[in-house]
Length: 206
Image (cartoon, rainbow, N blue to C red):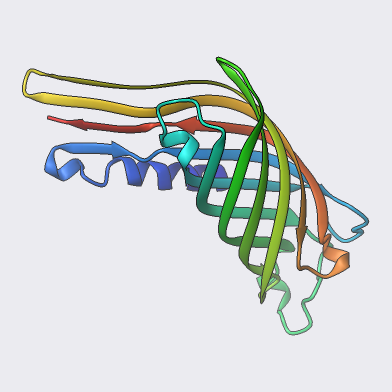
């Protein structure tokens, strides 16, 4: 369900100008992973989702630096009834949900023609809820990732239409350590592994 939500956001962005005869897809990175918390007895594995606009997705030449900003979400089950002192049983979802924004900075530690390895640092501002109880939290992560990529810029005009692309396509894998300002029993520290995808800036007008 959360993956579908992110897909809906991307689709909405790509068709924002459809009524005016143009479609634009922003230069994005999308990450989907699974996490495990260290020393937390009240939670299960988490689903981790990030979707944001990134410089390394927009730039049409190989780059050693990446800066990104976007959405971060983390979802994991908790023990039934956790933190539900004033919540009726029918309203309990028994799930910790974290949603917010992130800013990241990355640098390549190894870069070749079609493959590169990144070291990234990320900070997060989160809004959390569990069994109808809400709170704010800050987070930080350190990631290492490798991706296969191809960069370039192309444009084509003809037949009354225009198609242009600038940036990078990429497919990668990552592992990261995450610390968030949560109660220890909810797993303030964890490890996540997953896949990452980059799409360039694309515009089409007819």
